[in-house]
Amino acid sequence: RNYWKQDSEYGKMPPHSVNTRKTGNDRRENCRRSEAECGKVLPHSVNQGKMRIFAETEEKHVFDKFGEFDSYEEINELAENLFNEGDMGSLKAMAEENGIQKEIVEMYMQGDLPMLCDPLTAAVGKIEVEAEELKPKEIMEDWVEYLKGQCMENEEIALAVRRKGKTLKGCIRELLKWSFKNQIGIDKDILKAAGVTASRVALGIPGMGRAKKIIRDYYMGK
Image (cartoon, rainbow, N blue to C red; front, side):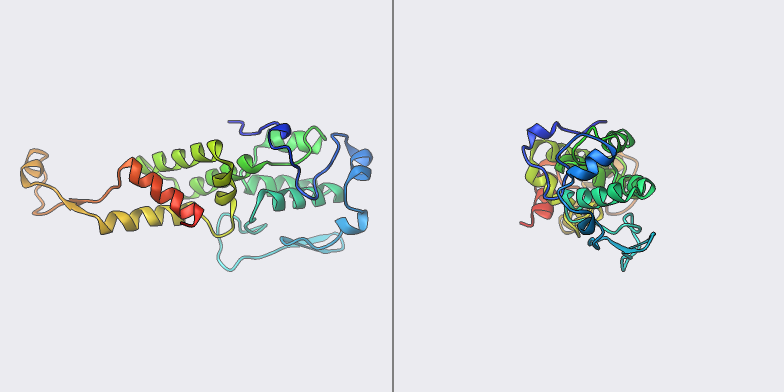
Protein backbone atom coordinates (compact mmCIF):
# COMPACT_ATOMS: atom_id res chain seq x y z
CA ARG A 1 0.00 0.00 0.00
CA ASN A 2 1.39 3.39 -0.88
CA TYR A 3 0.72 5.96 1.83
CA TRP A 4 2.86 8.65 0.20
CA LYS A 5 1.19 11.99 -0.37
CA GLN A 6 2.27 14.70 -2.76
CA ASP A 7 4.48 17.23 -0.96
CA SER A 8 2.07 19.95 -2.05
CA GLU A 9 -0.57 18.44 0.23
CA TYR A 10 1.47 19.38 3.25
CA GLY A 11 3.00 22.56 1.94
CA LYS A 12 5.94 22.32 4.30
CA MET A 13 9.29 20.64 4.19
CA PRO A 14 11.24 19.78 7.35
CA PRO A 15 14.01 22.25 8.34
CA HIS A 16 16.78 20.16 6.80
CA SER A 17 15.02 18.65 3.79
CA VAL A 18 16.34 18.97 0.28
CA ASN A 19 14.93 21.76 -1.86
CA THR A 20 15.52 20.07 -5.20
CA ARG A 21 14.66 16.84 -6.96
CA LYS A 22 18.09 16.66 -8.60
CA THR A 23 20.55 13.90 -7.83
CA GLY A 24 24.23 13.51 -7.01
CA ASN A 25 26.37 16.64 -6.65
CA ASP A 26 23.48 18.92 -7.68
CA ARG A 27 21.45 17.67 -4.76
CA ARG A 28 24.40 17.98 -2.36
CA GLU A 29 25.01 21.59 -3.46
CA ASN A 30 21.34 22.43 -2.89
CA CYS A 31 21.26 20.89 0.60
CA ARG A 32 20.36 23.61 3.08
CA ARG A 33 23.19 22.53 5.37
CA SER A 34 26.84 22.91 4.56
CA GLU A 35 29.07 19.82 4.30
CA ALA A 36 30.50 20.66 7.71
CA GLU A 37 27.02 20.76 9.21
CA CYS A 38 26.10 17.48 7.57
CA GLY A 39 28.98 15.86 9.43
CA LYS A 40 27.62 16.86 12.81
CA VAL A 41 26.28 14.30 15.23
CA LEU A 42 22.54 13.69 14.93
CA PRO A 43 20.34 12.55 17.81
CA HIS A 44 20.39 8.97 16.54
CA SER A 45 23.92 8.60 15.22
CA VAL A 46 27.56 9.25 16.07
CA ASN A 47 30.19 9.78 13.36
CA GLN A 48 33.67 8.37 13.92
CA GLY A 49 35.50 8.62 10.61
CA LYS A 50 33.90 6.16 8.26
CA MET A 51 32.39 4.18 11.13
CA ARG A 52 28.85 4.89 12.30
CA ILE A 53 27.80 3.86 15.78
CA PHE A 54 24.08 4.03 16.27
CA ALA A 55 22.55 4.92 19.59
CA GLU A 56 21.69 1.91 21.71
CA THR A 57 18.39 1.79 23.54
CA GLU A 58 17.96 0.62 27.11
CA GLU A 59 15.39 -1.96 26.05
CA LYS A 60 15.74 -4.01 22.90
CA HIS A 61 12.74 -3.50 20.66
CA VAL A 62 11.83 -3.09 17.00
CA PHE A 63 13.87 0.11 16.73
CA ASP A 64 17.00 -1.37 18.29
CA LYS A 65 19.53 -0.32 15.63
CA PHE A 66 18.77 3.33 14.93
CA GLY A 67 16.73 4.12 18.02
CA GLU A 68 13.13 5.32 18.15
CA PHE A 69 12.48 8.59 16.33
CA ASP A 70 10.21 11.24 17.81
CA SER A 71 8.96 12.67 14.52
CA TYR A 72 9.01 12.35 10.76
CA GLU A 73 11.36 15.35 10.69
CA GLU A 74 13.99 13.40 12.63
CA ILE A 75 13.75 10.56 10.13
CA ASN A 76 14.18 12.97 7.23
CA GLU A 77 17.14 14.67 8.92
CA LEU A 78 19.02 11.42 9.38
CA ALA A 79 18.06 10.27 5.87
CA GLU A 80 19.54 13.42 4.37
CA ASN A 81 22.68 13.10 6.45
CA LEU A 82 23.17 9.49 5.30
CA PHE A 83 22.46 10.48 1.69
CA ASN A 84 25.03 13.25 1.74
CA GLU A 85 27.60 10.87 3.22
CA GLY A 86 26.86 8.33 0.50
CA ASP A 87 25.85 5.74 3.10
CA MET A 88 23.01 4.23 1.09
CA GLY A 89 23.19 0.91 2.94
CA SER A 90 22.41 2.57 6.27
CA LEU A 91 19.77 4.73 4.61
CA LYS A 92 17.95 1.64 3.35
CA ALA A 93 18.34 -0.12 6.71
CA MET A 94 16.98 2.88 8.61
CA ALA A 95 13.99 3.15 6.28
CA GLU A 96 13.25 -0.57 6.58
CA GLU A 97 13.42 -0.42 10.38
CA ASN A 98 10.83 2.36 10.27
CA GLY A 99 8.47 0.62 7.85
CA ILE A 100 9.13 2.90 4.88
CA GLN A 101 8.51 1.15 1.58
CA LYS A 102 11.45 0.23 -0.65
CA GLU A 103 9.86 2.01 -3.63
CA ILE A 104 9.80 5.28 -1.70
CA VAL A 105 13.42 4.82 -0.60
CA GLU A 106 14.52 4.25 -4.22
CA MET A 107 12.66 7.34 -5.40
CA TYR A 108 14.26 9.38 -2.62
CA MET A 109 17.77 8.17 -3.45
CA GLN A 110 17.21 9.00 -7.12
CA GLY A 111 16.20 12.52 -6.18
CA ASP A 112 12.55 12.12 -7.21
CA LEU A 113 11.27 12.95 -3.71
CA PRO A 114 12.32 15.99 -1.65
CA MET A 115 12.12 14.04 1.63
CA LEU A 116 11.99 10.40 2.65
CA CYS A 117 8.68 10.51 4.50
CA ASP A 118 5.73 12.67 5.46
CA PRO A 119 3.70 12.40 8.71
CA LEU A 120 1.42 9.68 7.33
CA THR A 121 4.21 7.53 5.88
CA ALA A 122 6.17 7.74 9.14
CA ALA A 123 3.16 6.90 11.32
CA VAL A 124 1.81 4.00 9.28
CA GLY A 125 5.32 2.64 8.86
CA LYS A 126 5.78 2.61 12.64
CA ILE A 127 2.43 0.89 13.19
CA GLU A 128 3.18 -1.82 10.63
CA VAL A 129 6.64 -2.54 12.06
CA GLU A 130 5.19 -2.82 15.58
CA ALA A 131 2.30 -4.97 14.35
CA GLU A 132 4.75 -7.32 12.66
CA GLU A 133 6.35 -7.91 16.05
CA LEU A 134 3.08 -8.23 18.00
CA LYS A 135 1.15 -10.19 15.33
CA PRO A 136 -2.32 -9.06 16.50
CA LYS A 137 -5.31 -11.29 15.68
CA GLU A 138 -9.07 -10.81 15.30
CA ILE A 139 -10.33 -7.81 17.32
CA MET A 140 -6.78 -6.54 17.82
CA GLU A 141 -6.32 -6.47 14.04
CA ASP A 142 -9.43 -4.29 13.84
CA TRP A 143 -7.92 -1.92 16.41
CA VAL A 144 -4.71 -1.66 14.37
CA GLU A 145 -6.60 -0.98 11.14
CA TYR A 146 -8.71 1.66 12.87
CA LEU A 147 -5.54 3.39 14.05
CA LYS A 148 -4.12 3.42 10.51
CA GLY A 149 -7.35 4.90 9.24
CA GLN A 150 -7.22 7.64 11.85
CA CYS A 151 -3.68 8.53 10.77
CA MET A 152 -4.91 8.91 7.19
CA GLU A 153 -7.80 11.15 8.23
CA ASN A 154 -6.08 13.27 10.87
CA GLU A 155 -2.49 14.49 10.63
CA GLU A 156 -2.43 15.32 14.36
CA ILE A 157 -2.94 11.64 15.18
CA ALA A 158 -0.27 10.64 12.66
CA LEU A 159 2.18 12.97 14.38
CA ALA A 160 1.16 11.65 17.81
CA VAL A 161 1.63 8.01 16.74
CA ARG A 162 5.20 8.80 15.68
CA ARG A 163 6.08 10.29 19.09
CA LYS A 164 8.79 8.50 21.01
CA GLY A 165 7.35 6.37 23.78
CA LYS A 166 3.93 5.97 22.14
CA THR A 167 3.72 2.35 21.01
CA LEU A 168 1.19 -0.10 19.65
CA LYS A 169 2.04 -2.36 22.58
CA GLY A 170 1.24 0.47 25.01
CA CYS A 171 -2.03 1.18 23.23
CA ILE A 172 -3.17 -2.46 23.42
CA ARG A 173 -2.14 -2.48 27.09
CA GLU A 174 -4.63 0.34 27.74
CA LEU A 175 -7.36 -1.57 25.92
CA LEU A 176 -6.69 -4.67 28.00
CA LYS A 177 -6.63 -2.68 31.24
CA TRP A 178 -10.11 -1.41 30.43
CA SER A 179 -11.22 -4.94 29.52
CA PHE A 180 -10.17 -6.45 32.85
CA LYS A 181 -11.72 -3.63 34.84
CA ASN A 182 -15.05 -3.94 33.03
CA GLN A 183 -15.67 -7.68 32.81
CA ILE A 184 -19.31 -8.73 32.71
CA GLY A 185 -20.49 -12.17 33.76
CA ILE A 186 -22.15 -14.29 31.08
CA ASP A 187 -25.60 -15.74 31.79
CA LYS A 188 -25.57 -19.45 32.69
CA ASP A 189 -28.19 -20.26 30.03
CA ILE A 190 -25.89 -18.77 27.38
CA LEU A 191 -22.96 -20.81 28.71
CA LYS A 192 -25.08 -23.96 28.63
CA ALA A 193 -26.23 -23.28 25.07
CA ALA A 194 -22.65 -22.70 24.02
CA GLY A 195 -21.53 -25.95 25.62
CA VAL A 196 -19.31 -24.19 28.13
CA THR A 197 -18.92 -26.18 31.35
CA ALA A 198 -17.08 -23.56 33.41
CA SER A 199 -19.05 -22.35 36.43
CA ARG A 200 -18.41 -18.70 35.62
CA VAL A 201 -17.30 -16.85 32.47
CA ALA A 202 -16.82 -13.09 32.14
CA LEU A 203 -16.06 -10.94 29.12
CA GLY A 204 -14.69 -7.41 29.02
CA ILE A 205 -13.99 -6.64 25.37
CA PRO A 206 -14.67 -2.94 24.67
CA GLY A 207 -17.14 -2.07 21.94
CA MET A 208 -15.68 -0.36 18.88
CA GLY A 209 -16.81 3.06 20.05
CA ARG A 210 -15.15 2.60 23.43
CA ALA A 211 -12.02 1.12 21.82
CA LYS A 212 -11.72 4.12 19.49
CA LYS A 213 -11.84 6.50 22.46
CA ILE A 214 -9.21 4.53 24.38
CA ILE A 215 -6.91 4.47 21.33
CA ARG A 216 -7.33 8.19 20.68
CA ASP A 217 -6.84 9.11 24.35
CA TYR A 218 -3.67 7.03 24.57
CA TYR A 219 -1.97 8.62 21.58
CA MET A 220 -3.28 12.14 22.07
CA GLY A 221 -2.42 12.13 25.79
CA LYS A 222 -5.93 12.80 27.06
